[in-house]
Image (cartoon, rainbow, N blue to C red; front, side, top):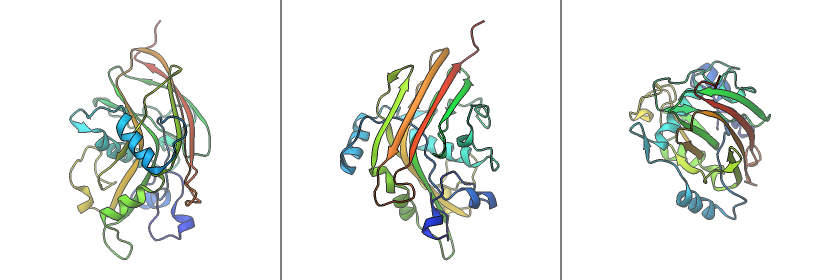
Length: 258
């Protein structure tokens, strides 16, 4: 992620940022999360082609595309106070915070890349799981000297995603399909989570996200284990070109057996 108006070395801090005063403190960085890709990939073109060809992501859930669900995921992530963001959760105690209990999708989180997480999380039955594998988020003002148009915001969000070296996702010890590379529309990060309007034309900020995600169908009731590891390999980005993710969820779908 990039923070508006800061020097380049300061512009890309790891973590998600809110679009108010705390957004400016926290946002301007890359938030890496999770998904799968297999083994090392040779080139940017190979990464893009493989992602599109073999990603196993539903076309739509609840009437919204997978890419639109990533917009909602970012708004969810950016809605928390400093220190309570889902990607800073080490043990899963914040798993249910801010979730839409009536919606069809449950959000999981990665980390800020500075620690390995092992989380326990109980989720309702019947929920799809949206898991960000590794991705970038960029925002800039819509107006003023640091304003940036939508095309440029999206270009900057794409920077490291042509350099995915590897990603591994295991569910109950079995490899999952390759993740989809999902590119969001430009959006207002401060809008309501379910606002699907042309948000980059209003509000203070214009944001976009680009990266690799898994949108899993509802899991069967009972215990499951989801393990994730992923990393970039961009030699031209000294800040986050080699970001990595390593975390695990012990999931309980529905009530545990007595």
